[in-house]
Image 1: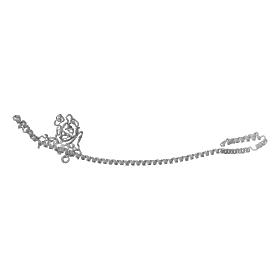
Image 2: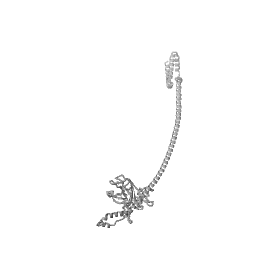
Image 3: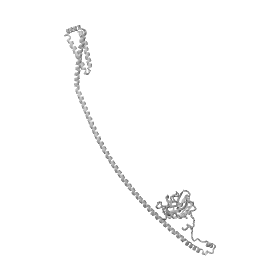
Image 4: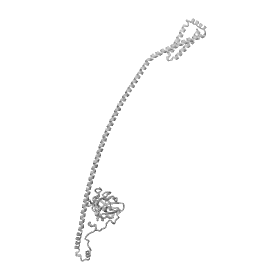
Amino acid sequence: MFTTNCRRLPFVAVVLASAVLLSACTVEAGDEAAHAIAAKFAESDQSVAEAAPASDLEETATIEEVDSQEPAKVDERLAAEEAEMLARARAEAEERRRAEQEKARAAEQPRIEQERLRARQVAEEKLQREIEEQRKEAEARRLAEIAAQEEARRIAEKQRRLAEEEERRAAELRRRLEGEKEQERKAAEAKRQAEIAAQEEARRAAEARRLMALTQLEQEERLRIEQIRAIPALAAAAEEARKTRIEPQRGSEGLNREEQTPIRKTSTAPYALGGPKPPAAPDPLLGLPRSSRVTVLLVMEPGTRGIRRFRKTADPVLCVDSVCYISNGPGEPARAMTRIRALGPAVTIGTRAGYCRRSLTCVFRGVDFKHAMVVVQPVDLRVLRHDRREPRAVMVDPTCRIEGPYRLTCSRPVVAEGYKLWVVPESIAERAGPLALELVARAGLPQSPGVAHAGID
């Protein structure tokens, strides 16, 4: 009995080890299969233990029979039994594992279905979202295209309006420029007509001044001739009056000597009442070097300084550097003297401006320019305070020329505050003659070429 149990112990151990091994190998099927196998073997051992008293005799006989057999066969049989039991245990464990797997699969199927359904729903939702997003993107693209088209249309419309506005402004500018050009043309034409009219008016005024000056000169010439003709009668009357006064005293020696003194019946002094020069009088300008002599034609504006009896007249004296000149007329050289003497009381109260007394125009012949450029200053003689005009540095005008008989013109006048003058070379002045010099001075020294001719046609 004990021997039999001892022999069965290895078998049970092997079976238990196999169960444990199968349980370890089939961990994926769960711990329940291993527990089931172990419980089965435990039940088998218990049944064997319960049946042992009833069949002791059989077992004893069997054991003895077995003991009588060869140990090799016993071992082989035990091995076969163990293999069979192991195979059955494996098959049962596999079956149990499959059943558990089926059960687990059956229990897992709803969850899988739910997860599949959930995944399908998620996929459908994702698809819907993608479709919605695509729809929104398509709608956004459509709206963007519409907005872009609208923006392009708006820009094109704006550019068209700008182009039309620019064209309108350009047309307006062209019209304005054309209008301005037309106005400028009309203004230029009006200015040209006005200039022509002004030149014509100036020419007529110059011609009127020339005729007036010529008439005045003719009147002065007639008066001078009448005075010259009256000189013998005046001298005879004076001689008769003198004889009448001294007749009672004829016996005295002084009166006898006075009677013996011849009396001039004519005056040949060139300055007495404008009388004529001696027939054979030499040129008064021959004593000066011709290279330094000039003729200065002066036109002054009425001054406002000093005491003036005549508002529109002047008493001009021309000062050149430190020398001043008093005019003797257009045919005689001016009288030179120092500035102190010319502006002193003797001249101011006495001879004053000589030929140009109470005149706004004056001709100074034979003025000595000792240098190429000199400083000239016209002075209007007043009683207490002389009217000194602006001094200017001048030189001989090389543009002075004679155009036609007795026509004098200069292109470079000296214009200063209160006066204007021409500096004419003495050779040109000699060729022009006293009458032309007097006329051009009285005409105001005109600068216009159409008015500058102050001579006799």
